[in-house]
Length: 527
Image (cartoon, rainbow, N blue to C red):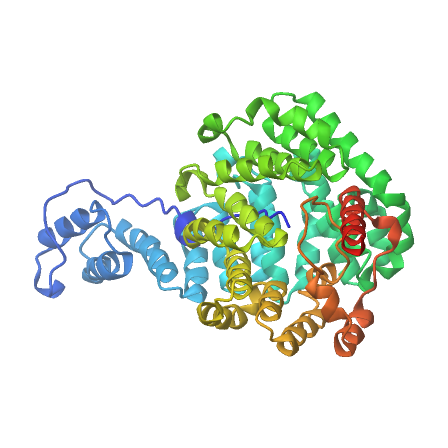
């Protein structure tokens, strides 16, 4: 699969306290052992010195000094308001989020806005103040960024929707989605982002059983990614006829709509590399491989890769898949190797994790285990600095498989234990690794566990489909282990209770190519 992995946000990075002391004097000094013995002048001087010292701690340094200042009642009363800011910072630093939320409210009454909009949302969320978190996000999305509003309202919306779902509050995720689509910011988003918001609302409406409310949102579903999940999942059974009609035979209708949308967006803004990336991706999924190569040729020389953006790299990722489809595997190898070799700096190009991970996953799918081990060294190095738990898990699982296939099971066992322990991060990866290690019964248990979990079901159903339902043209090695698992009675019973096999009408252009290769391979083996 092709991964899109983003770094997570943190309150520590977003809080942005605007603290200015009541006066400006600064002298050298440090935190004394006994604050009570200090004169007022020395106390105030040390406070201002620490305030100006990089790395000074709100909890260890500022709050104790300010508490003493406020306690003496002989200083500027503004210090009380000043202390509130550091009380809030300290509560966040110590992850006392109930206190932090209460202090946020007090600060806003006394000092006005003291944190960025997204930090306010984060604090409310961590304190389980879910409705106020939604209120804050909607309010922040309605203000210009330079006036204190959210700088990334679309990404912040998706993040909060996921967080509410993970907290078991899908009802409030639905509330958020409905409010966001009704907010003024929604009308200003680019077409593709509006579609993504409507897709998210569609999923939440279906989860809540609101089929009639979901049906008008079906036109936002155009990407194969969604069709291959929704049409296998019985939660969406009431909408299967509508989805199959909008997909068309071999998904030609949906794929064509996707290309038309991407071409229209690019015509309106031909200099925007993201628009080119989206068009190249749509063309690749539709099997228009020659056009993919033509559109990416201008920046396919590795000599210029260091200067390229993430959007260029996604377009090159599609180019590698096109090369695989056209039988030019060595060129695809060289392209991925060059992409993975650029200098990595988590602060500047953390997005490189997508491509070093995709390179390793591609080699695993091809059964090139020696090469995959080498590629995973680079991928794991990058993932340890920037990767999500999901990407770390799937990279570890592929490494287990490589070691097992190469007869190095003793090296694989410690890693296998970690993969199984962290299976909630990527159940399919854990099941795959266990199968590689010959632990079939345990792999089946994890598959069944995921099928019974509404939050994990869609991805597991996707993995239990045939390889002809794919948008990637890379060759594969051997029979699909997940289909072997599905032949077991216990797995089949759990699978058919919540899902179904995709209809042949949804075989993609890449899937047809896979079927042709499999038939040719079988013919050679039989001849």
